[in-house]
Amino acid sequence: MPGQLDRWLASRGAELVAVRRHIHAHPELSNQEFETAALVARELAVAGLSPRFLPKGNGVICDIGEGDRVLALRADLDALPMMDTKDVPYRSTVDNVAHACGHDVHTTILLGVGLALAQLAERGELPGRVRLLFQPAEEQIPSGAPEVIAAGGLKDVGGIYALHCAPQLPTGLVGVRSGPFTAAADTVEVRLSGRGGHTARPHLTADLVHALGRVIVDVPSLLDRRVDPRAGVSMVWGKVHAGEAYNAIPAEGSLKGTVRVLNREAWREAPELIKKLVQDVISGTGANAEVIYTRGVPPVINDRMASAIIAGAAGAALGPDRVVEAEISMGGEDFAFYVEQVPGAMIRLGTGIPGADAPLDIHQSGFDVDERCIGYGVRVMVHTALAALSTPML
Image (cartoon, rainbow, N blue to C red; front, side, top):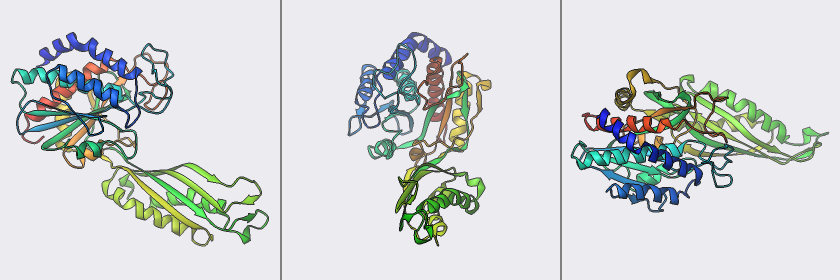
């Protein structure tokens, strides 16, 4: 297998880089990935496969091979609403839209995996079925994973795998971790109302700004004391608004932030606990509170067996010294919806650019990758598909 895959990548690697650059230059926002999905479907059809579009036409599902054992591999298609500030030939041609999270790389790698596996299937060397899931709207809430699942993406699937660009890792390395991988990511908004008035007479008002300050400081602090610290709960405010005049106490105020949790049970309990803490904190201020808690994505909890399979496959594909332990991220990933239903694992693919002036991060306007990562990613995921299909437990 390694020799065959190396020869295949040697002959097709430049095409994959060209595909990545085309997608990078023509990014599409969440729920608008029609041209990207069409490109993927065309390439798969040319390889003799039978891709089908999601109902909206902005995602693709494609099975390769035959058999009752089904393994799923997932990539996300969408870009972010931000400028691309790189000075490269493949810079985004769409104003304020950029592939700053590496989804163009994820899509290209999964396409390459599909094309390589299609050749194996033609020769009868694929021991089961592999389902490619090209998913829209990972960057938006509500996200696209539930749409893929509703369209039958996980039907008969015994396991699922994915990778994510990691510019913190050198190209050629992958990061693997069993257990908590990324955090649940929810949004909480608190709206306070009460009697306003002159700042000279705060005792005649609810003093909304003071009440907001208490919520800002006390609720995260109390939350830390009410949840097991091993659950990994983080509450951070990002938006605050109250009043216009410096000498007038407003009658309304609001704040909005994120709640991130690594533990599934703590995540389920978070909404009611936070609502109670807000009410406790403003009690006695005279203010009224409305708490709007919006679910985002669950935590990604990598399955132990699935993590072992992909770690072994990555070692076989790249060498055991190229597999390192991934750090836990407090970022959110809607891959979590899949691993809530079937065993699976996500890994981090090193994309760090040698000699870069400063370390890059995802969601930055200048984000780019060392494009050698595409070949490494194809190798890892092809090996993973074959290893998982050959393992009694996916």
